[in-house]
Structure formats: structure tokens, C-alpha cells
Length: 275
Picture 1 (tube, one colour):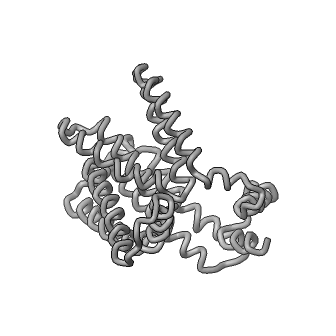
Picture 2: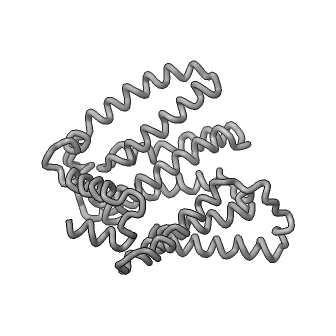
């Protein structure tokens, strides 16, 4: 979350809760309908300040971590009080799809403004990803947003009571997000995209007895192999000189040393940097 997103989230949460109490919606609440996932959201947020009580070192990392986890508390409270029924996921999907188009146009405008010529697909994509990072956000944040967009959009297409025309529009709206994921420099975003589609296909193959999906899985597998084979970063990730291998090794060693209580939010960062 950036500052604009957090500010928007706080405003929305304030008016959600204001409406809940002013219009006496609490009178309709029943604990029997509380979903466990919303309680886990709240518990995940509360774990941060609770764990800080046992930390031997304090820094600004604690407040930054609380800021990052605060949305879990907000969504958890809204879910527990039963107000998620007021959220129309189709509108969420459409707004997110519009934002994905805006992201593409914004970076294209930046490239055009700087006068960067089209000097070849590979070189142009490198420039595109470079200015994506500087004008929008890091590829990790953008790719996480795009994967969430795909999940919400697919859910809307399968479960929302919208017309066939709107389903087609929703389906077409996911293509800008897919394109951004495929050209991204990040590996995690592409892997997340691949796993999301695989889980979807598997669900309909097993639970819904949609065995014709098997053909799509075969085609999907070929696409996955093509995407991974064309990504140099998947090959680079296995190289012994990749700095991330050392980062992962340090993290694994720290987990082995203190698998239960860990080092604490602030102390863990300090310990990691020192190593």
C-alpha cells in the first residue's frame, strides 16, 4: 500500500463503520455468520504488536510493519460485523481492470514524453519495465495487484449474477493485466499467475466434473513452458552468483536457529543486515 491507497482505505473504513452504527445495522448482526478468515485477519494484525513486546530492539520498522498490516485489521473488522455483503465484487473487478489500463497508458505516455524509440521488442520491454518501476511502483507490488485483479475477475465471471454481456466485458478486461504480467521482469508475479490458473482449472476438473477442461490444461501447460523458457530470469535464478541465493540462505539459517519465537520484527531486520 502506498499513501494514496492507505488514505482511501481509511476513508472507506470510516464511512463503513459510520453507516454501520448510525443506521443501526448492528441490530442485524449474528455471531453464527462470522467467517473464520476475518478473525484470522484480525489475529494476523494483532500478532505484530504482540510480538513486539518480546523484541529486544526497536526501530521505525515496527511502525512501518503496523502500517502494512493495518488493512488486515480493517478488512477483518468489516468482515466480522457482517458488512462485506455490501461490497459488490463486480465493481471492484471493473475498477481494478480500468486501473490496469491506466497503468499501461501512463507508462506509454512516459516513454513517449522522453522520446524513447522502439528499437526492438526486448530492448523496448526493458525500458517499459524500468519506467514502470519509477512511475507506478515496483514489479512486486504491481504484479501482486494484477494477480489479485485476475482472481477477483475470474470469481465475478463464475459466481456473480451479471448478464452474459458483462461477463464478456469482464473477460476481455483481464487481458491488459495478463499482458503486464507476461512482460514483467518479476518472477513471482508470473509464478503467481501460473499457479492461480492451475488451481482454477484443477478445481473445475475435480469438483465440477468439467473434464473438457483437460484440453485447456494441456494447452495451458504448453503456454507455461513457453513463458518460462523465454524468461532469462528463471535461468538466472539458478545461477550460483545470484545474490538472492545468499539472501535465502541467511533467512533459512535464521529460521533454523529460532524456528518458534524468531528474532522479533525489529531485531530480525538488524540481525539480517549484520549477517
